[in-house]
Amino acid sequence: MDEATFYHWLVIAWMTLAVITFVALFFVTAPYGRFTRSGWGPRISARWGWILMEAPVLITFLVLFGSSDRVTNPVCLVLLVFWIAHYVHRSLIYPFRLHSSRPSITVSVIAMGAAFNIGNGYLNGRYLFTLGPELESSWFYDPRFIVGAILFWSGYALNQHSDRVLIGLRAPGETGYRIPHGGGYRLVSCPNYLGEMMEWGGWALACWGLGPLAFFVWTFANLAPRAFKTHRWYKENFPDYPPRRKALLPFIV
Image (cartoon, rainbow, N blue to C red; front, top):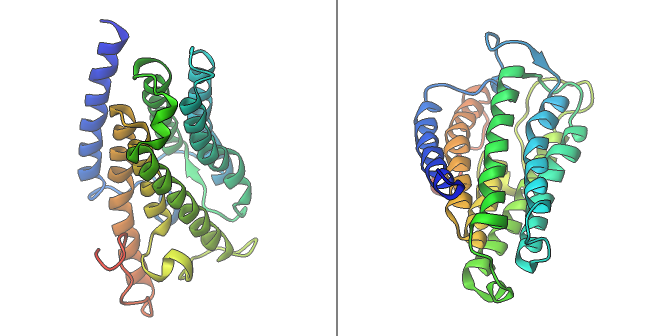
């Protein structure tokens, strides 16, 4: 089996697993953050957990880029900036903004997250830098790239601001949760998740390939059920929770 055939079947398997995960997460909640609980093995600090989960995808993507023959392709370079902007922040900046009181993460969740990220880095990096069509500079003027770039950076800004709001709710040494307000939280309980979905939906458009599309499908499958559970958790734990605030999509759901 050549790599192109392997890649094709891996994408199909990846999307199938995403659908299964989407259904499963309505019944089983991943044990991190406000849903941390015992029974999932040993834990380490959230700071190191995020680094170990997210850094592998950054490394994988950069290795695939550096070993390809498209290192001077302008479209690849621009899309590389998209990827680096998200994952340098997620793996090297965001963890050090977390307060030490942040709940720890189980090693099992870290291992699953790292394994997913390595596979995801391969699917996206290999498509862009080797297996997919080599995009010319004219792609920058294609509506798919323009809309995708706008969606990506809008989602990036929403995700960043929403994370800052959450981090600012808890002073150093504090534990517990509060109702977030401002920004996207005026409309939905999880604008951070919505922002991430916008990012990778925009990425899928800007790249226009099955690997990037699979990433968006996985992002939705993983975060949508958690957004609904987080919304329900807020309503159950805060009697004064804003009644008109939706879970994920403003004014809709």
